[in-house]
Length: 414
Image (cartoon, rainbow, N blue to C red):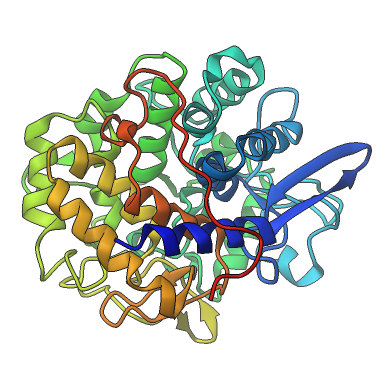
């Protein structure tokens, strides 16, 4: 399935995107998502990069995540983006969740992945009090209904940015629209405080993917699962899909996006639900099982688009295929015994690497590479082509650390 080529390319991208320095007396080292487009440390990206780093250099995997922890506030909050080395630019400040260019991090979150990534890449996250404090912050500040599920105050906190699932919720202020800076400015005035945003009328969203990673991190810490609450509140029995919950509620139709299937990554998802997600939706050639699966929006949904720019603005997650989505869904495929289909998913993606390399995302029909040209978390393709034995338990089966072989060198592969 092309594991050697994927491994060489993955190691090359991780090593060339690596960044080290000192900021206000704090040493840092992390993997830039892409050196030109994304120079700072992004929370979710670092969590995903560390998973692959464990195969080449376990010390760097640990350093990557410890650099995130070095940016944590005393109360455990870790921001979406950390501006090591240089402040956010004046242009980006308009779109970024900061009060001023002097801010060290953004004031908002990304999918709470840290404890789960630590479990995969380093070891037991419960042994580091800083990790527990971070996830305590998430549970305390974002569990608004007391049921264990977390809420978001902006679409970018989901990690899925301009996904069309948020169009019915934020309307003209959704991310990727000319009105998005107005949403950022309003929330800036409210100190990016989710309870103040709710008091001001919202909107807020209980999104599927962040609740999946929240649950996986809670499980990694040895805490109770939130899967029952996720099923109770976000699973739609009629369609067999998971759907975001908006506040105030919206009557507008919700597009079908890939994260409707993301609970497949939960090791305690009931088998009947998981098989329905795979057989009725993921393997449907009209919907998600395209030539390069899975598209970020179901191909038979009116919101599906192969474009990533609208009115000159970049709008992510509206159709093209992302490697991290494929990886998360593959965990459930392997747990449920769909190994042949998971191998085929890996084969189709790996076939792109010699021609397109590790791009940010790919056209789901042609496989054309799109977005950033050297994207770090697309190295997760190696987790697809050379699956870890613990993948079928979402790496939580025995609490151990899985480590793969070393590959490649610092020289760029051909």
